[in-house]
Length: 279
Image (cartoon, rainbow, N blue to C red; front, side, top):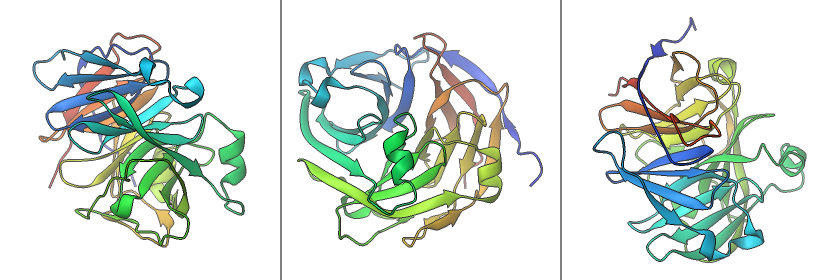
């Protein structure tokens, strides 16, 4: 592949988080989380700049008192899954109360190629979260090496992922999920995206990933085989100016791209880019 085309930065706005690590759409609202603060921020997509409201989670007495929020995924009008990197788990939260309604521990079992890296490097575990079928979760490992992992109850068959396929949120309650399938980056995807810092489903139903180190966005194939294996990019775009610490990705209905930055400051940490070509 020749050099991928570029997406220009059209505008910059603020997210009131010191370390933006995850963005997601919930209807017409944008949700954001960060590594440092136990809070979820929400804002309608209009007007721009966004008018953010905070949902404070400090009173939930989170397990071990931890934050390290890396991603957020809506499961209903009021509930979300929040991915934590350290410890490796997913918190099921009802934001309307707010209340913790379940904790899902993420286990990489003995014998898996990533077990030692998962246990040994606390800053290179789960970076993003996507729902799959049967309550399974796709969790992206950031680097050393990057991979896409399907987590589900031990003994379940993997379901993989396909464009337009069903997605089912895990049931409330505590559980341990284990790796059922693994996909490794290959070809131009590994070349242009040396790490993965977020993943999202676009308005076209396709799976997109963001690279911090590569300042690039890739569209993945329409199917991730339940047997696992290698995955290559269907398309790649670079971000003009190579902004540092790109860690949140959302694609709006018209293809406009929003990228959140971990700038260590709650200012100028949300980029609005050109539209992606959607089909």
